[in-house]
Image 1 (cartoon, rainbow, N blue to C red):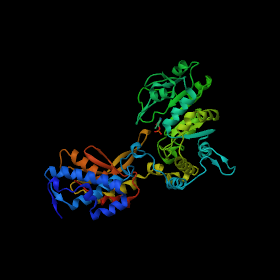
Image 2: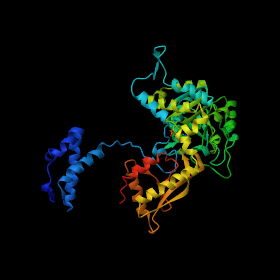
Image 3: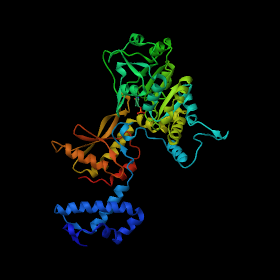
Image 4: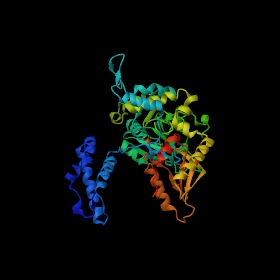
Length: 464
Ligand SMILES: *Cc1c(COP(=O)(O)O)cnc(C)c1O
């Protein structure tokens, strides 16, 4: 082994690749990747030497192996969500139940009857796989699935209100994270937004006076990620439906989360359900597949037969159609809803939302000493926290939960130490994502189910 302390002692790329230890890497990963990584490794070795640091020649091989592993690691990876937000948009929202994962694997494996009627031997319709169940669960006449709820709203507006006016309450002109702004969507859909009422108060009379021959439909947008409190008034779905009906235009309700079951039955706060909105008189509702529904990313448009059919005929629908894996997963998730008594157990989203506080606290008490063992300089305690649903459902209702609280009481400014520690947890083989607030790193355990995996994963923890 020779020490490399000047740039001219560095091997060329070719010589490094001819090292017998590289042969296996070359065979396993192919020359293009190994060569590219060898250039990287030699370039950073040169920087290191020029900065006055020497190293052993053998390190080049191990650095190369590491660089290759890093390069080939999939970009999209599973993480452990301990943020306390159950449906975290940045962390992929709903976790799928096993039956949906199995359905995806089964359909991904080969050909399927996606658009084929097996009995008749003729062309079929991809929407038919989920429609009957969606109608049964919501009371809608027809239902169509698209890529996400933003697409559902865009498509509905474009199909039913292009070149026409859509009155919306000023209190409902929402922005949702990720640049979904109702006024922008309206513009892109080709319709004219007519703002009605004020930010905090909108009355039925405001809608009445906004109606004209150019009005295409009335729209209600569920205020999903905020709440206006105090001196407020909004026009209910039923009132809006009555006005729409009197003027012979449809009423559309964008529910956002749109639960398929009454969450109160599971001990949770009330969230408007799809069938409630339809019963109140909405002609169409739009909602997400991966929020409270607990399924894959999708947008669902459900309601009146003629309106859904009109939407299906819009050429834009083709551009927003769901793929077979989404449909397979959604179908499997919807089937779970046919047995509401088992739902809280079978559907991860609902299981986590309804998880017993005592069970979370007991889990925290078991894990605190384990984590403490890895974080000697820190103090690890079990604390009560407030978790949230996330993704705009029940924005102000919190769920009592329990967390590991990691602090450095000996430091007056623990900010940097906490940031480094949070990063070390994110650099674990399966990254663990918590949150920093009030001079502490918090790991809310509401969504942690696989305790053994969590403990095993910790063995890779390297604290700076
Ligand atoms: C979340 C949400 C949307 C967007 O749904 P995606 O599935 O994220 O596209 C639209 N409207 C409301 C009210 C929402 O809460």
